[in-house]
Image (cartoon, rainbow, N blue to C red; front, side):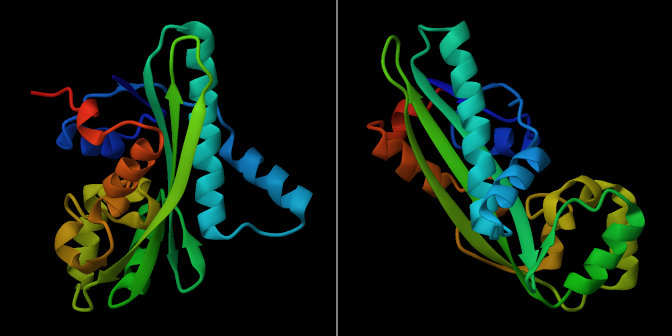
Amino acid sequence: MRVLLASTSPARLMLLRQAGIEPETSAPDVDEDAVIAAVEAAEGRTLAPDEHVLLLARRKAADVAARVGEEDPSFDGIVIGGDSMFELGGEILGKPYTGEAATARWEMMRGRTGVLHSGHSVYRLTAGGDAHEAHAVAEASVTFAADVTDAEIAAYVASGEPLHVAGAFTIDSLGGPFIDRVGGDPSTVVGMSLSTLRRLVRELGIEWPQLWNRS
């Protein structure tokens, strides 16, 4: 059973590897900002975080699944797409990109709880058969330690890790010790909810152990 990850995210790749799966990877050709802008303009409203991440996850998976169907008609397996965003106090916090933004973010987050929204889309492809999709959103709450010092924030920002991750934090690397609690599936915060993926795969008629391909 082949597994194709419609993402080049190191965190999502690591998660699948830790779960016994060595996926192929393919970057989706999706202009995320344009997709969101078009849908919001058409509907005359701002998408809620769960709608936002699910829309992008589905578009990414669909793009790669369509490409695979054309380039490799014999493909027998699944295509996985995902998207995540962090919400704190009703504000969406994306990647900070600069040290100044990351520092301000952490000064605001310490002692507070936010929600990580993660969209998932899985396509089942078979040789000569129709494509079938299952999708879902997972959410996990994240509570940051209230006693994180300015010096710790400065050191963490200087490491460069928080600059290019949604919410400016990780739980599986340098940022982990500054987080007190995670409510929900912890893998959701890393990049994808493995328990959610398992349920989606089963909806498509596949048992999770069928995907194990790492020794």
